[in-house]
Length: 106
Image (cartoon, rainbow, N blue to C red):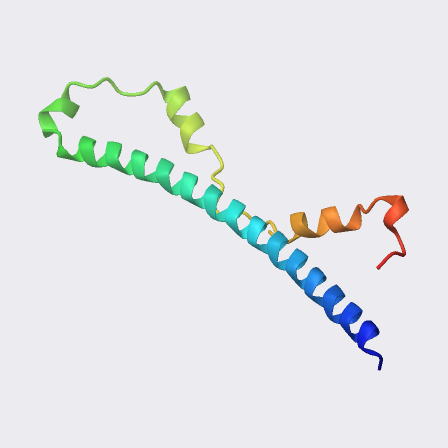
């Protein structure tokens, strides 16, 4: 196999691998950032709950009860337990939307 063709194939492989790794790293970083933001929100809520637990029980004795309609609305609210998205789908979509002029080149 001629050197020029071998060098071209190796260059193509390295280029495609680098593009894949960059896309994968970007998706992973975005997802980690979203998880970090969600954890920050959870930590803030937890801090509020811990502060409420530290209050004297007398504080809660004088509180008014929630109206029944509000209590029922809160009880019937569906909760989101987990997301079922595939994080790599976003990485695949841009590759599928190549420009028409670039098709067949490589």
